[in-house]
Image (cartoon, rainbow, N blue to C red):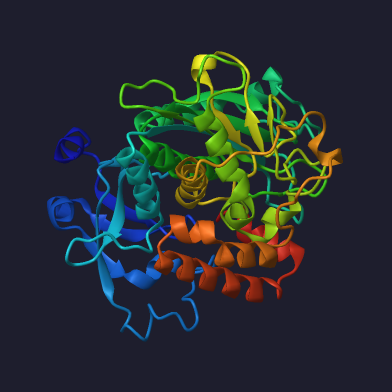
Length: 444
């Protein structure tokens, strides 16, 4: 890490940042001369900071605040090292950190530790998840009363309609995407294909798969931060909000995963189109836990505007082969690449909690040798299927009462998240739809 700073002598300040339960970066600005002490000793801030609400406010009656004297935890580098922050004007380094107790034990309320715990459980069984994410976002002109697609920097024109898989839509924002890919390379984010999506100014970027699950979650979190910051540098907004426009598709965050053995052999592939028993176990676990994980897949008020029938987002609990109307899709292609695509999550998720919930549910299916119902065919929206929770409150109740979530997450994290979402539900009821959009455009 010290070598990075020596090779970037123009960097004068450091941002240290941890991920709270809402996926927000919480941290400090520190002069670069304190870098060595930071790397060796870490930094400190209150445990309560890891579960602030979406406004950045303390959770009322949380035992982490006054009852404990608002005690500090110690935050140490994650191992990712220093990264540039290309969306800022001054050369700045970002150091990702995560929280521990003074005795060195991980803080159970840290979402990155929650994902690390799930990964360790897989490794203890000789299994190694391989994950990739696909992130959808809108580029938005939010300078007026209503959201609009920004004018193209090339032509000065706005294209108000959808332009799916259109090169001209990408070309219209070529400078932004060129800067984005350069920044991803500088930040060691493995960004792959970019396409235009079904909404005006909507795009999707795929991040390459890896068996380093924590890096994939890191990349996803960092990519969201980068896209939002870089868009502002270019004079418009970028948002992963689940549903910025009432009449256009929402933003999804699809997660692909397979599971290998120690030799890297895909355990979902048995040489047949149907896939291995382990794949079926994982599918069954994800379906069984779907109601409980909905809060992690749709964590905000705006999330539930996306999860409605016929809106390019799943609403029924089902799986299928090569069928994008199902919650879980088994893509076609090479059998050696046999994998599960989890299609429910919105772009507004905390990637650490979402991935912990999905992989944890899959592991439950494997541990309990669960069998899924038959895969569906045809349009899932027209079938009589069990449905995911349709309201934020119902999703919160399902999460809090789910036996599966209690197997995946520490009691402290469950309690913290439930308290956080109860507070948000209460205060969000006081806001107008316009105020909700204004809140979420730069936060989620």
